Amino acid sequence: MKRRCAVYTRKSTEEGLDMAFNSLDAQREACEAYVQSQKAEGWILVPDRYDDGGFSGGNLERPALKCLLADIEAGRVDVVVVYKIDRLSRSLMDFARLVEVFDRTGVTFVSVTQSFNTTTSMGRLTLNVLLSFAQFEREVIGERIRDKIAASKRRGMWMGGYVPLGYDVVDRQLVINPAEAETIRMIFRRFVQLRSAVGLVRELRAAGIATKSGRAPDKVWLHKLLRNRLYLGEIVHRGTAHPGQHQAIVTTAQWDRVHAILKEDPRRRSAASRAQTPALLKGLVFSEGRAMSPTHTRKRGRLYRYYVSQAILKDGDSDAVGRVPAAQIEAAVVDQLRGLLRSPEIIVGTWREAHREGGKLSETEVRDALVQLGPLWNELFPAEQARIVRLLIERVDVGPDGLEIRLNVAGIDSIARDLAPRMERAA
Image (cartoon, rainbow, N blue to C red; front, side, top):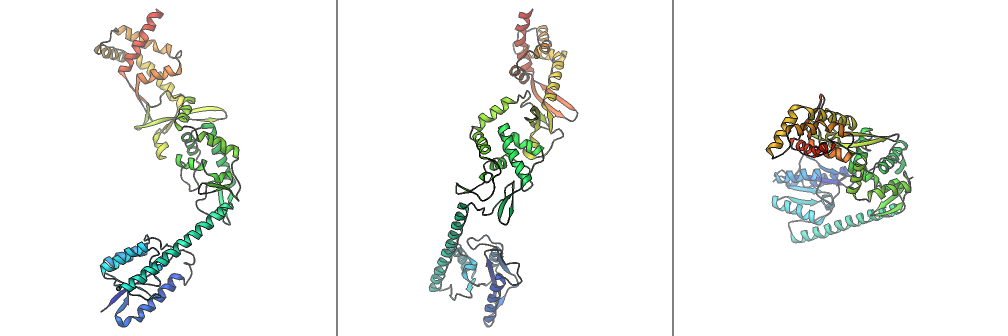
């Protein structure tokens, strides 16, 4: 009776795998020799190889092992051969799951260096003892590695991982990248000036600044950058900072200023930022159906305000009109609004709407109130101007061909009622 044998090999690290004869080859050679010795019993090798190089035995997330289990479930394997049982698994629970699969499918498990038979109670006991020691060995190795990492970090050594913007790795040490370091310092300075992560992200994207991996910056990336104590010249291990062996990019004073702002309530900081940047059309402007948000930047002490499409802010894409100067679009909307409020159609429509709602103003009073809004506009405070705009305008759509303003008739009636008494007093 033929017994189809599958050889499984594993190595925890990738070190040495590029050699002509590596650990996986040595394991396979020993297993194939064992299968050859059982040729009289009908044992034959299956043509497929099941080699996991660079995968831990602490879990079952291994591509070759998954392929082997799939072939076992499909009935293409009768015997699984390994060099040692810890090549298949170092976890007692995981191995119990594998043995359950072997028992259910009638597959025999063989370790060529550890002689036992899983079909007997003594063989299962031996297997469990060996696996317990394999799991113990894995845990001890893990503890040694963790202790070594902790000791190295206490000495200020960088132990690998993601390389942050501002540094390069030379001989396993962090070395300052001068150009990127200047970008980091600029980010810390601008955050103190803007006090807004969203506003700073917009500036960084507009300037073409990217992350270390080349991606466009976002708010999450910025907050991680501003909280990364590597830039202070420190190494953090489990919440404790230690003096690092690498050079700092920002000073303690710069760090403290940024983190004093980060400790503030985000809502209050956002409100203060908005208060510094008046936005007459906030919540009213749209481009290709998507809202445009107010933003600003400062260059050489001057404030420049814009409305930017959400397509740019959230997706990094650009609408047909992705960004417009705030002062230009606000002046255009106010000019069009003044013209519309003087048109007979708007005046008559407003009067009819007010009349249906029980309004007492005559058509002449409505016309006079709306016509006089233009001369009064420049005398109003910004808050009053914003209130009037929100009453009069329902929506402003910006397109390549110009503006389209949708008026709020009920709001026009409210403004007319407010202005009528003023006109009577002036008369």
